Amino acid sequence: MIKYFLHNRNVLLLLVFSVFAIKVVAQKEYKIYRSKSGMIKAEGNLLNGVEDGLWKYYDEKGRLSQMIHYANGEYHGEFISFYPDSTVKEKG
Image: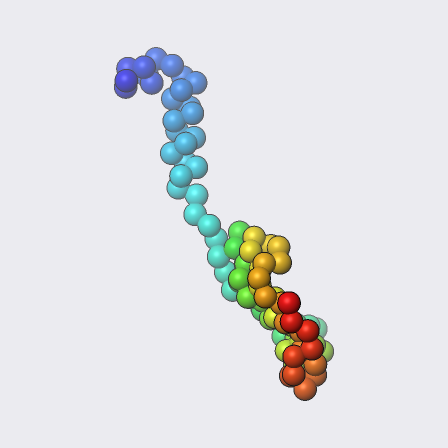
């Protein structure tokens, strides 16, 4: 089988590509977005550059206004919005 790989360049290149693809690791980071005044506008996890997991959004006075769950950048799971006094406005 090794001789076959050595004599057939296309298969060898495919094998090398497959080994490289297996080593790719997801990049996860915690991100905080701030307004010009320094107040937190949003915070949550990014997985490969898109929202993943729980994200929290804040109003201009820094009060929690929404919590949204994401999976691969799309809404997934619970959504909660809040009134300025922190009581639940909407849940879904």
